[in-house]
Length: 195
Image 1 (cartoon, rainbow, N blue to C red):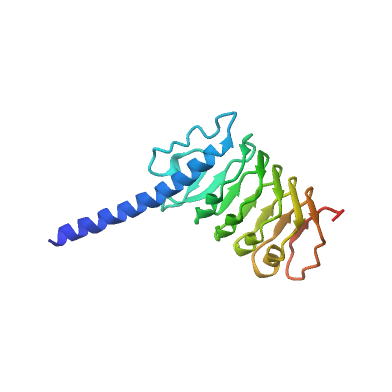
Image 2 (cartoon, rainbow, N blue to C red):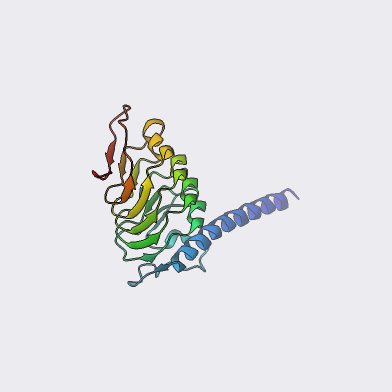
């Protein structure tokens, strides 16, 4: 009887892990479908696999949770889906130097373990989401060379004081407003001189 209970417990844990990993597969597959991939960079992204840890450009931790998406210079176009904000263990989102357009989803503010958000040299437009201010772990925020507009949200600027943000580059956008001096520690902030 005791052995049967242990077997049931182990089976239940494996089902939970599989469901969690399949959620990440579903999210990443949906993102793949929202992109045009002219050079088949995402060819290894097989939605029939149990988890995405064997896919190229994906890194997982020891629990098989996605912690890095690294698709810089991949010639991708399309948009970011809001469900990316459900990759809760993600630490690095590297999508620089592509042709991705549309707005930056507010849901990225749910990625509370994110260390680096590199979306520079794309075609993103609209405002910088204030929800990015929720990411206290964020060290590098590079949004330069896009078509972002409006002011830099106060919540994002406060990451310089209350969070770990050490580099923020928002140059070569259509942003307005100014950045006041922050006296905490060395932080590199690059903004358009004309703002």
